[in-house]
Image (cartoon, rainbow, N blue to C red; front, side, top):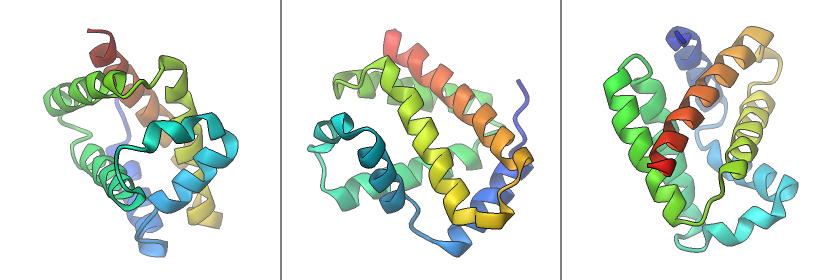
Length: 135
């Protein structure tokens, strides 16, 4: 699947321009919708966890056209998440809450095309992470 790298980059830049730190809101949404996920996040401080997620999002978008980098990094990330006791059925929760966060921050700028690009990207990310998770 060819991801829309330009749309992902411009929409992320738009969101970060409006709210530089997007991950605090992401975790609010995640824990509100899926409170059972909260115990999985006790290893790091909230600030550390938020920074790690934000850095990961930026890195993936920066490398969206580098299939080898994505495969290597996302396989490793998936394997680490297995060790964190994350279950495969939890991956869609993160995608749902990430898209909700981006849409909320983007406001009127969030279009069906942007949403489709992010859904495609998250599907690809999840697929690669789950390959690493299962290996």
